Image (cartoon, rainbow, N blue to C red; front, side, top):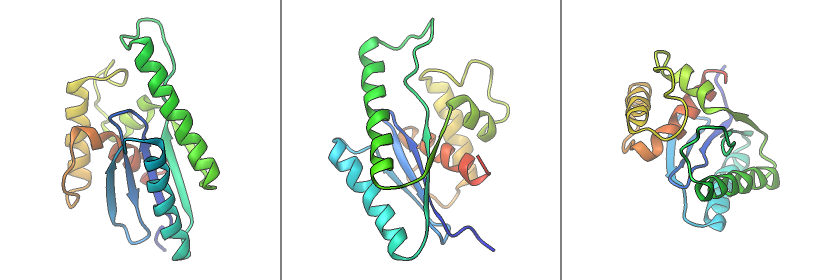
Length: 163
C-alpha cells in the first residue's frame, strides 16, 4: 500500500523553499514567497487540494534560528530567520497541518551520509552544492532544482525515508 499523504517539507530561510510530494508521488517545488500572506496562501492551497481529494497532509519544518557561540550569522539575520520560522509554525497550526521539526544536521546526515563534519551548520556554498547533487540523484525527474530549493528537497527526502 502506498503513502497517500500530501507531504510538505519547508526550508524556512529567507531564500528557502517549500517542497511538496502528493499522494501520486509527484513532487512540486516553490521558492519561498515574498510575503507572509503569499506563504500562507501556498500552504493553504496545497493543503486544501489534498483534503479535497481525501488525503491527509503532514509537514516537516526545518528547526532553525537558534543562536550558538561562534555563529557567523548577524543578529539581524537571525531575527529575520526566527520570524519566518515562527510564522511558518503559526501557518501550519492555523491550517491544522500536523508537523514535526527537524534539525538541519539530522536531515543532512541522512540525505548525504558522508557529509563532512561542520558542514551541517551555517550557510555554506560547498554544503549547498553537496545537498543539491544528492537531491538531484534522489529526484531525477524533478526539473529546476537550484541551490535555493535543494534544502527543501533534502528535508522532503528525509521525510519520505521516515524522518
